[in-house]
Length: 125
Image (cartoon, rainbow, N blue to C red; front, side, top):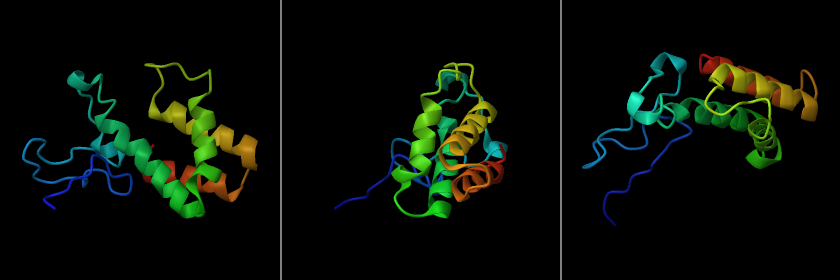
């Protein structure tokens, strides 16, 4: 086998590939301090996806178990929320949606809700 590269790392955005012959090095940030408004990427929609991806990873590993059973349910419910308008929803609004959906599903002060809040805060959102 030759060199193998990942496309994304949810655990450590920005480390999926380094010195790729065609792509260079992974530019994804894991924290808002690395946020980039890239006009060639609709404001950075793909590049900055490392931030919420990392938040999901942090929350899922903090909760443990199968990610789709708890944190995955919250993410899916938030993404289906009709109040979030495509192209006008920022990370702060999505953070609030995930927290609200988590409270609806698991309750205020629940391990899942706390893990999601902590993960967003750790990513600077």
